[in-house]
Image 1 (cartoon, helix red, strand yellow):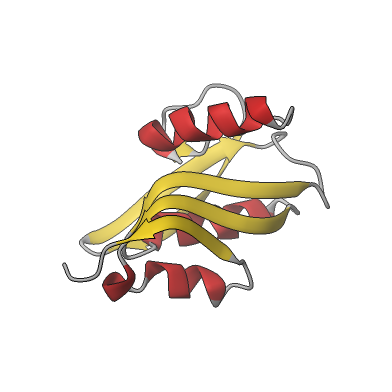
Image 2 (cartoon, helix red, strand yellow):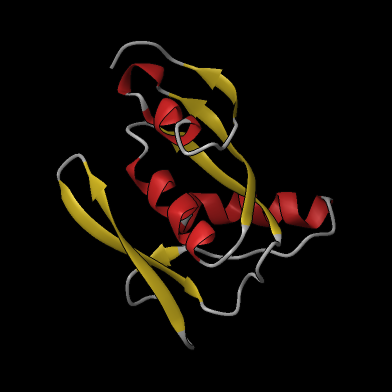
Length: 121
């Protein structure tokens, strides 16, 4: 999702010989897009992906650098599911567990994997 996630997601996709789907903030992608509004700790925003980026039933792993409050990741999971994708997991380098984002993603039925966690905020 967005900038730092592209670096990680692109590298992971390359290593496993899978496709890469960018999910961006509104207005940054060309071509036909689908979007979803999502809540941030300071208001609302919107993210988009290409409408033909995933097919119904396609298996997807969400990759980003950080999970904090989980608003952006929650929006991305909902957008992918709205398009018919099967979100197998959400993977992050860093979790800030006190902010509850990973729990928000688990509540959507998506397992969360992280490399490290930092308590406190």
